[in-house]
Image 1: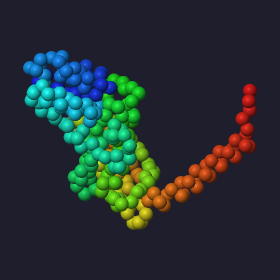
Image 2 (image 1 turned 120 degrees about the vertical axis):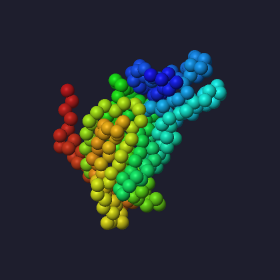
Image 3 (image 1 turned 30 degrees about the horizontal axis):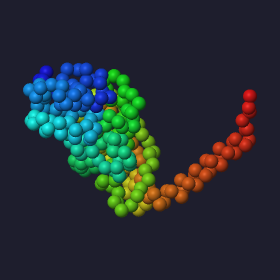
Length: 252
């Protein structure tokens, strides 16, 4: 193992950081804050998963403050993290993907961009790998981002309805760089108030597919769907109240 090069991951991946050549953000910060001499610091840092935008900025700043030359690799998964509008997330820590890039006809590419403090792993993680639900949520954000970036008018707001969401996990995914390949299998834009798509989303690590999601969804103009959804909610509420009236709770 080249000691001049390390992989840095979020603190939630402490088990993975027990492997040779891997440190957590806190462990690297300790080294930079005086824990070791300059000649014991790495000259190459590979960004793994779990590193927040804040930690990335801090670590770069500490290397600069100490005057230590370092090359960061894989930083595009942090600097390229997509915006709130495209991922439909208010908190940036909950955004799991980078901006999608078109790579061919109906083909797009992104990177997984996992923050330690995101909502999905905020409770706990186990083992060395990334939880499967992280990839499921990343797939959801992927079809939202591709649609908002490339398929829908920018001056309108759309409501997304998932019609089908199948996920196959084929290998453990570890907290290293993960590519996301997005393929539109079919696209229906025949109506002005909606768009429907069938997509295949593959998560790739070290040239191997570790997870595949098949997603079918519809994007509908928010102004058209809101009244219908409200009426459906009213009907559901009335049905629930009628059930309670006809079958009152029996107190012990």
